[in-house]
Length: 348
Image 1 (cartoon, helix red, strand yellow):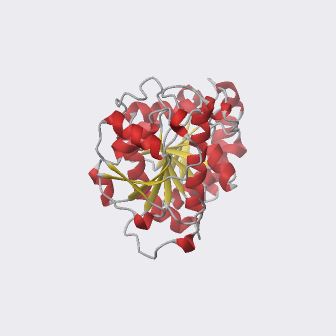
Image 2 (cartoon, helix red, strand yellow):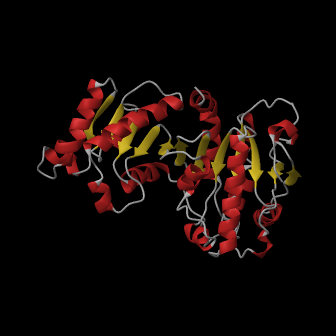
Image 3 (cartoon, one colour):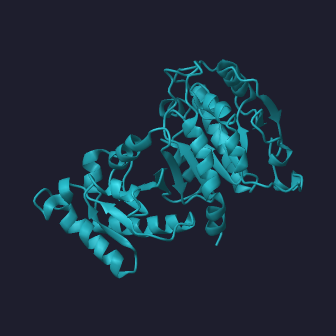
């Protein structure tokens, strides 16, 4: 079923519409979605619309023991937005009746990809305002013949976006990543003056897209104690410090390198508006230790805002109804928090 904005009612929507692709139907994605939609507080900020399979939603409702009603809709203006309703756009691309809960399988990857693809189409047409994603499984995607290794890469390919940024937010702490899915050795090798300077510029622009224009960014150190002026490594002296100096000379508000054992705490206390982490686990450990369930990933650089839970498909507990929806609720609220600024600024 193809949708076009011209087909829709002109009924105005009071709040931003957030699309929720169900993720891998063999995992906990459908369960955390139906649970999150029971959280009454979200309806003060957003209007959530699920893209996925009716079968997967029904199964999740049974597993979680919920009596929510599925409202099959063609367009968000047809939605009924309260905690007793799951507003669902079911494109029926993939028959998920054969999905085995808790297993890596091609059909799970195919379904997850289909849900993402359809959400992207809706967002690009302005039918939904932002997307809040649920977990997918890399092995299942690979079995389905999908090349993307993760959400960010899939969204970038589907929207023809070049190297979008990932930012984590938890409480008042925001963290960007200079490198992501590479080995630690390769991450260290990728720390160069040019790359650090580029990311200071890009991350500043990303914050502005979210409406954050006050405060300074901090760049984390790579080595213990930021290298102690070359005693414990030369990356700070040769690359990070020169990049920060040049950025400051260009007018950017940035400080660093600041030891990774303190910089995240300082940012949480309000000294910095964000931290540029130099490798994957450096920032992940800091945010997830602070509050694992409320650490949310925000993708910046797409034509629309995307937020996401920051946990996996949890095949080991899928189908038990035990999965917590706290992260899903938080992803929806973060989408509502930033969508107006992002949509306005990305179009300018």
